[in-house]
Image (cartoon, rainbow, N blue to C red; front, side, top):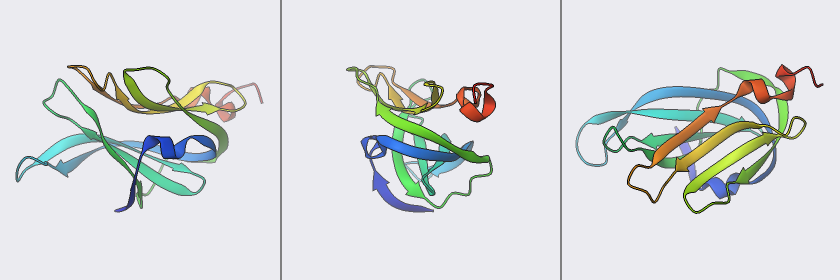
Length: 138
């Protein structure tokens, strides 16, 4: 299902967002011969699909385990939306925010909040109401 490993910073810059799906999947644990329920988010930028996977840790803490270019099928597709990906500039987050160029609002956020804290948190937020195509602005 996965094509290539990558980092969030690889997605910084201008793109066209074409679809987003959020799901839960059973992912094999790194610590044993069992599967864990993990949140995933897949999205298509510039006709390439990427999937970010949660590392659920212990049920109280979570983080982004990895992000990869993938062959995931996106069901929630929409007309292209011009976005810019910007990494958050603070000491505790490793999150990329995708802003709609026309509304200036965040549509998609992916990464780990408080990654160096005792309680980090996986971030996979999609806010479709902030897209120009769902607004009366355009």
